[in-house]
Image (tube, rainbow, N blue to C red; front, top):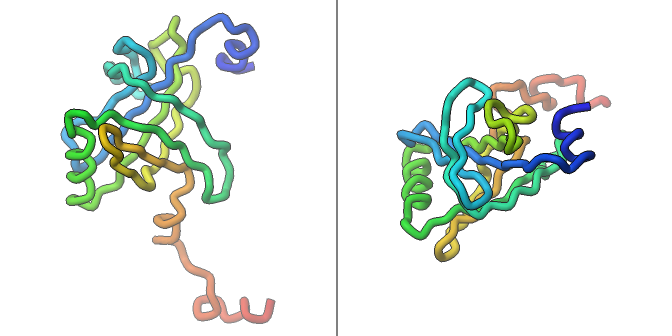
Length: 160
């Protein structure tokens, strides 16, 4: 039984959901956590980071091979910082990576389970918030450098 399964069964500890958005075009990552207080935590690669308190709600999709597993959340854009970072990523044509980590409030020395890494698929700016959608299976970028098996590459396929 995993640590999270024990917590869900007993209800004894509080779960801290955290999000890290990173991009090669940015000097530093966006670090967010749910709740009203900033949280100092240690990541799986032994980095000490402080997640900024934010009103986020996380609903994780099921893992699978379909292209439909997406996670949607909103980022505060009152100061315009989120829009500036998104514009910088678009200008540099760089991919934005979202990392979701779940910590126990009693143990912030490591995530309670392996982190989820997703590619940001789309985003919309609506007033003071930026709504972002991320997914596990990046269908658009999955084809290259793989071989495409069509009738030109493998002529025997047309007889199947």
